[in-house]
Amino acid sequence: MSRVRWAPCRACLAFSAALAALLLLPLPRLPGLAPGPPAPGPNATPARPSADLRPDDVFIAVKTTRKNHGSRLGLLLQTWISRARRQTFIFTDGDDPVLQLQGGGHIINTNCSAVHTRQALCCKMAVEYDRFIQSGRKWFCHVDDDNYLNPGVLLQLLASFSPSQDIYLGRPSLDHPIEATERAPGGSTVTTVKFWFATGGAGFCLSRGLALKMSPWAGMGSFMSTAERVRLPDDCTVGYIVEGLLGARLLHSPLFHSHLENLPRLPADAVLQQVTLSYGGPENPFNVVNVAGGFSPQQDPTRFKSIHCLLYPDTEWCPAQKLG
Image (cartoon, helix red, strand yellow):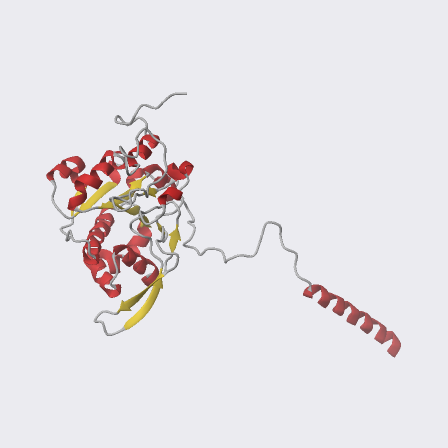
């Protein structure tokens, strides 16, 4: 009887050993999948894009200063703002009757200082934020007075996200997060905080959902006191609130461009697909995008007129397009 019982037991042991060996074998990899970083969190991609997004759903804030009304702002009013008047609001620091006639009720004198300090910059951003919240619009986008903004491409980009989610879109000027010293109210406690921020010189956008969450640190003038906690300019303070205080994340976009970049490296066939563009200015006049057009570099040193005429050839002052 013992031999009869032992035979099945040996068979069981053999089967168990074979099963264990199979479990130790590596699983086959499914085609098309490769190891990589974890999937993005819930804030990285929207559950319901805004397919019905309209131009008037976007609040575009242009930051400028009194001395740039003629040189820089005049060019923007002649070009892209002429195609986005209803959604564009200009934030400046001085009264200008001529500008008021051109911009109507969309010219806002912030009464901030005209000096280019972090306090003055944060003062203007505080006014921009409050005006956006009051507007009830779905998206807030900030640009500087040396940016060309393509309203059509901007709308396409924003339509791929939901304004109710935590969306912070822009381009960092650094290749690493900034590290700042954070001072608690009263200055008794000092800590170090790291966060990404989108440079204001390239422009950035915030969803209404995220902007509302920023209210305790940005609304009703509190933006300036928040900025003093890290003693950084306006764009850095936005990143501090979004990433450092709220734990949301900047979505890096290559479609935003500032004068800090090497703009001639942008491929000519990609220029018209960008959200924002810029130029180097008098200190770096050759830092402009390469784009063909009806204007010479002497006639159009920023290349904004040439870009505009390629996008909107029906503009009355654009050179006639050659046929064939």
